[in-house]
Image (cartoon, rainbow, N blue to C red; front, side, top):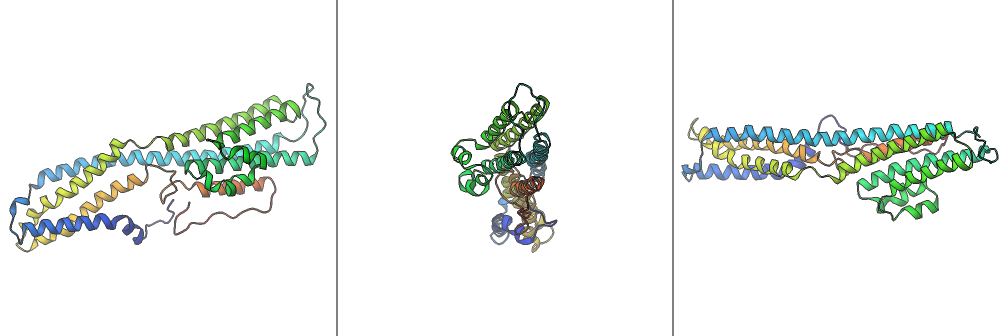
Length: 323
């Protein structure tokens, strides 16, 4: 996610130079044909071009609204992941504290060391789940498993999960299995506490499913493709409609059409590009949801709740981009 208030010119130029070059060459060719070569037939009436421009502006505006909705929904889902991760840690620490009234469970009183270990497993698995969801959405689960997920799981859990199709879903399954042990075998949870923790796991599944829905459902190609086609069609016709209008000003003013045509075409193309870069918010690109930073924030919060001291620092933007 780009975090600077204003885009640097090098960023603007990076996304614009190819289209600006094409628009400039096309406008120069139209002017050369119309002026020095005196082939007036290349010009077309301005009114149809202006009408087309209005239609294109409405169309790309509609597309951009849909693209931004996808990005914003993705950011809301990850906001929910932050909140429910904190809630899970609080519930694990405050519910799993000592023996509860469970006469049907015969188990010794839990020691402080056992409770601490239980807390660590429950909270660390949640951190592992957050990182696993992020890596699955970015298709990086194989590359970063050992550094971002495995450290928060036991060696056995890590080996059992790393080659599964959806490790994040199975991490939640492990959490549910441990809750059953805490309730039925250890007597550390009563019915209400167990139910509330399971409800939190359900919400985590819902949030993961929402992210997967956005990831696995591409922005409708008919909207994205035709938006691109219409913008470039308008940009191709624009110099043909403007050249005669500038020629009316004076014999040497026809060349003024070039900068104005390039400017208008650049604006339309930039609007279309903004929508295009917002279609898929989980691709680890400049304008995407900063999932790596969010996961680091979750890790810091949860490990501090455990009382750990070896806490990593928050991630800082790299070249004004927060990943």
